[in-house]
Image 1 (cartoon, protein in one colour):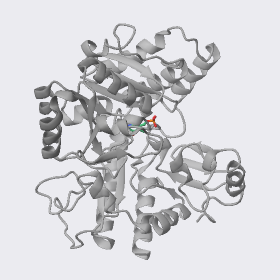
Image 2 (cartoon, protein in one colour):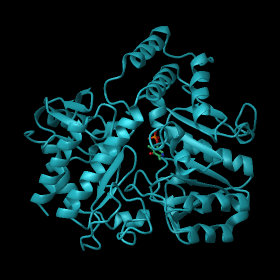
Image 3 (cartoon, helix red, strand yellow):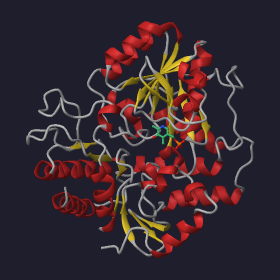
Length: 454
Ligand SMILES: *Cc1c(COP(=O)(O)O)cnc(C)c1O
């Protein structure tokens, strides 16, 4: 058992960081752990080791990019080292950009042209600009509780009828053009189209809500979005920044759910651990980007050779080895195990996730025990006895927010060396480096912590 999360050296580093970095961190969620975040010394397979020499089983995995864990396979490492040795970047084309593009195009049905950028935020911002330029319309429909990064167009909250910026610094006018609707609510999106249809450039959605709970689409939901977009001449954009090359393997979530979006955004895994983003889709739409079209998009680091090498070799490794089978089997194992544990100790909680993503949502409604739930994570199945009670929208997820998660559960797991995402609604990830023994130890830890307090 670790002495205390974020002990001695981490404490001193955080104290020092508070004087040079805003809030001591470079992304706000990293400040969540109390009293201080742990500072990482190095990664090791499925573990991270902090500067106080505490070793944690890591389910944050960089918030998604680290499909293979913290140790890069030799081929990936060699490709990165070679790209670095050749010269870090040029601002002049390189062949590795074509190779990664071809790999994505070969595996993702809806994509036949790509533009590489440097983050998921850049990808979603550019995809929306492309949709607006291509359709000549301004409004976009997004899902409440969906996450697309820190761009003005996505920092809007509320309802279709009453919406406002969700961050200081975002002009009110952005809320005019962004219409949030609840996920999984076909009637709400239909109503938005009935009111604004001829002004809607695109519907932007994650295939499943991956940053806010993990919420599965209810059967038929994506089909209804696809049909509405077709009826009104709007584009359907899938934000596969988290799900891309994780859910549904190399075909991505759109393959798993059998839906063809017009545009797809990628990031995280396709950069193999380096900063990346990409927009992909049919050539007819994608060519609207500069230089072939009129929609401006540009970047000094776009298609960075080191990132391209890391991404390409990571995906090639995943294709050649049993990566998806391994991580998905462990995903099943942990979700099934968690389902048994919550049935015994907290039957009101929801086990969520699919493939190699998982989370226990501390939902509070409906405590009667049932045993024939979805067995390995909420799949929104109509015949599940919990169907009505499992969260279907971002707002449903929020009603489950508890201090128990934040103040007692998460720290107790960390003290027992299991590192979960500190935000109670962000997904956790299983990597190729995790083992069945890791999963079983994690389940024992969940069991111990959930049965103790509460
Ligand atoms: C992480 C994420 C983003 C933002 O990507 P960044 O690289 O952090 O800018 C956008 N959309 C989704 C679905 C994400 O999970």
